[in-house]
Image (cartoon, rainbow, N blue to C red; front, side, top):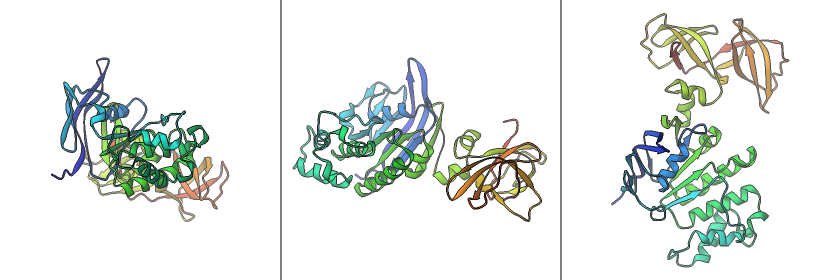
Length: 351
């Protein structure tokens, strides 16, 4: 029987020392998908991962893998029987084993046919064919993470779980390794759940991302929608860079702000005149020499092709804006700007 969702998490509640840390949380992962649980430290995302892997019991709800219940209150299928692979933050490689033996360890107890051929294929897939006889300490951090990935993929798990896999790597390496991981998982057709606090990792890899806070998923959506269409103030504040600009509702789809009128597709039924906070992203404010709106440069951060400016408006409110890097303005200089926002995201001021 074909099962569309490899993983189904249904209304789970988890506790530590009688304190609830995951609250009625639900999501599903289709076959071959890569999804992310994203949130700050302490939000419960790692507890969810441990519950799916079979290391943490449930107080309520159930977890299904391949359509079969593997966790419910009072029942916990053993982790080794779940066909779930794990890649940990610290990689957890065996320092006394060579790379090929670390990978082969993932095949122990399985009827893997020709294990050496399987190991050689995995080494090739993760780009380490020449590294099989080295020890972990002889590899870079990125290479070690590739070995950990190969070891987790060796027994061909139905689901791969990755816990902060790139957090110990520098920015350039984590971006390159993230692309490689995505390619490897796509080639394998592997279903994967990534747990991370870093939205860059989540957005680069995740088809769907669940933003978590205090044990609950605030929004389960595409990276694009999380950035442009956040459903609540927490997601709006947590995702991306931006500020809240004071505004006043003119009609259900129009808000008046210090920078001008903003219109969008969302309908706000609070009534005309309601005081709002409008989410303004750096890409919503653009330089415009013809504009009469002048803002003063407070700070600047060079980012290569662009410069991120912190600008002070006449009211004293500070906003962010991305200018092309050839527009190199001095701190203290006045610049002409225009609001170019096609997504109206607003929250009632009292909220």
